[in-house]
Length: 230
Picture 1 (tube, rainbow, N blue to C red):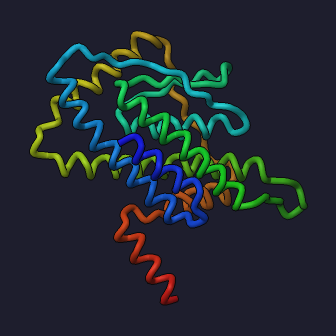
Picture 2 (picture 1 turned 45 degrees about the vertical axis):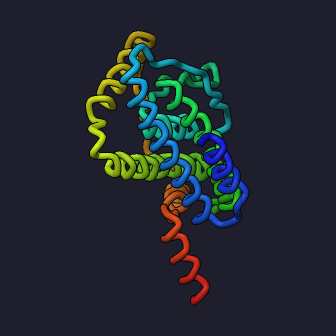
């Protein structure tokens, strides 16, 4: 499964078409979700598995939006991230198979987000002063929030497809275990809000970059045909 996920994400990083990149990423999330649901059921039957933690680099520039991206990827995969701003990293807590998924997706999405941001170019105001920094900060923040929505949608689809497996008690138990680990390790934790966007142009471009996605191969094919007819 990990081999298939890596292959999908590598294609997403290398394609020049945003729609294809997002479709491939959504497909990777669905594969991960299916695999990790199976793992959750097996681990629940065996017992004894506990949440773990691992560090993930969150570096400048734009460390805040990058931390937001890691946060939404972690939440979509039933993990939690704690950003250590002064150390340039975050701690991600969750069950082992979920942690692997978070690290793979975050690394790939950061490459994709950076590529889309650079393609959007630089910005200046009416007086010729650079607005590139605020544009890119808002771009990445909007991208992170919208990608989080789309990853959750992909995960929820898989959960609904497996409704007959009665996953609710298992998932609720795992979520509670992760929350308990966070509370034990970080009792004075403060929530990072991210702040309001300072550059509306960057925010709209970032959300659009994440929102152009085709979430399935059928939709991607339909869009390509429509573009060809256009």
